[in-house]
Image (cartoon, rainbow, N blue to C red; front, side, top):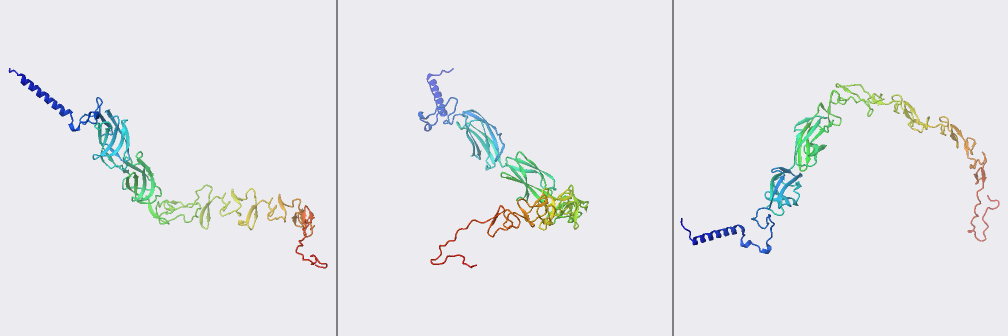
Length: 459
């Protein structure tokens, strides 16, 4: 074995020490130009990473637990975001990135480990990256890929081209992606001409049953048109006539069963109801395409005729058909009660009156001075009808044919025929002279003129 000289051993040790020092400097020491003065160096807690030392490992970890990678969010939708954190990530920022550019800030300084987010309606569709980043150390960060899409609606029922008839029940079913909000459903001609409203739907209610009116607003091709937030959908359908398509008197098309339709009985335009009075209540059925006999469907109604036209009347209460068809009550004051024309209880008597409508009116012969005790028995001047008798009430007196107030009548003052002097008046049956009048004004008499007055022998 060769002996190692002391000089060689010292040289080898020196070389190893120098190599170790160079390695340490290369790993731990930053360039001299980037070193900070001792007064600016920030202390780093044990186990933590300094934000000024980019070469230090992250001081914690973040794991996104919701949403899962690759899910799709939709505009206007609200979604939950959850994460787990260890180390220096008690407060985080949550952001959305599109194409490497921060597009939306979900929240900042969040310390709860969860938050919720409503995707803006103006968000562009595409592939995004969800980032949860520590406020303390940006190196502590988690990323999750997801997509943002626009809400969509697909009408799965009725299908394009389906045909329905008046009275049919139509199930409108939708497949909805995202949150389109409240969804309007209407019946349209084309895409812009609204025929009628059908109803509203939502993401929670994706089916709706609609019964087609009978008769419908029209026949032909239509669209079921649905509208949500920034999304629409259409599905075509036909509403057809189950029987025969006729044109009514106003020129509008109607669907008629020629076996049962009284307006189109047997053929279009064959009207069984032409002999019915308007609003008369009578009907004429169409049986197997032939007009039947007119009848009255209302209870207590009788079929009446007027100049070969039919109408229905309640003979027990109809003033124009009281007790029999065409028998009208003679006075408009009367009512038909149980088939008999009757005056009201307060005026139970019917008397002729040329000034009344129909020439008759109801009255009370116990009180009516024109019909006292019987019709057309009129009481004289001043008389009252009391219990059916013409009576001159006290203190009046009968003078000739009149009932005169002798307490105040100057022609019959106190008794019949007692005439008060001219200019006098009658009070309490006595003629009285009016109070004396004032003397005439003589201020207009000229000196030397004779006194004004009645000359002797004058008239």
